[in-house]
Image 1 (cartoon, rainbow, N blue to C red):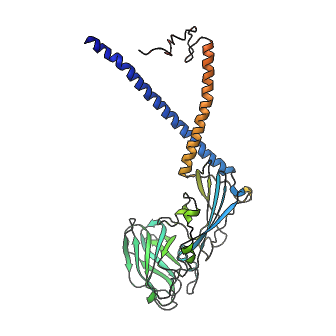
Image 2: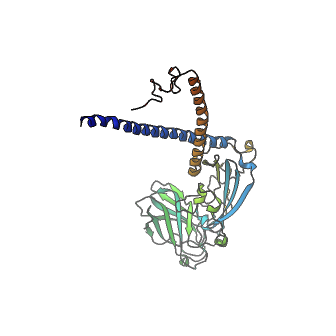
Image 3: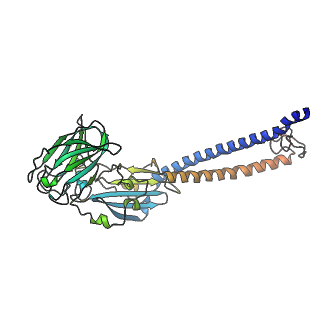
Length: 400
């Protein structure tokens, strides 16, 4: 019994040593992998920034596409070369489409204008407009710019964050419902929560003529005003047949990381008429992107005027010579799929380089120590007695 008791610790000791050795090796391997992955991520970012400084996709062939989308058309041009991509997205708003009701007012009051929204029929049916705004606010008033045949607003509702629709006002439009009437209808709202979406109910048959809305401003208690940036409508005088038959969508043309690809999403707050210019960099896959800001136009930008048919925002045409107009742009927003792939790629490359540098060096050191009769692991003098192992570090020695 005594013998068994004394032998138990000695038999269990090698197993515990082996377990500790396995845990130690696994921990060391994990830490080394994390180091290489961190270095790979750093190299991926530095590569994207270097391509942002010196990569110029203009030398590549331009690919242009036209995609209709809810009363407007996106003209999309892309230049792509190894490690670089440039996208230029220019929206063209259709005349009398609901997009004409976004942004600041620009149509002349008292006259028919293609720069305002107009329903598909005159007095044919009741209409509605759903308008989204860039920032949430608690509105106290809504200004409806009725530039032609006004007096049709009968109800205003607001939407909570969960999508519930709540009545904010019912009554008679401040603008008289007579032929040719126009003006700005300032309607008080009874709202106690923040919102980014409202809905206007329009009694078009009761307001004789082609009812037109140029803009809708949302105002809080401090007098801050926002203009709508996205819109949905019951009908529109704009020709939407192209959108109905076109097989292309924005997601078919624009990469998924680009905000334009989400332009149809309920919470995608995109300007109706503003040009959007994007650049992405990375190798072997695009890893980071940024949006190139546009320079304000010399005229019209300060007043928020927006045209009918095409954007007045200045065009940024990519040029082969960066000195002729485009400054280097460092991408800062991640494209997660590309960034993760590039990180793994560079981590594997660095690990392979580390192995190729360390292994041959270690082999040379071991050969030199062996020629001197020393322990190849620690260099302790063994007088060429390699069979007995090393008493200093335990190389080739038994653990029993």
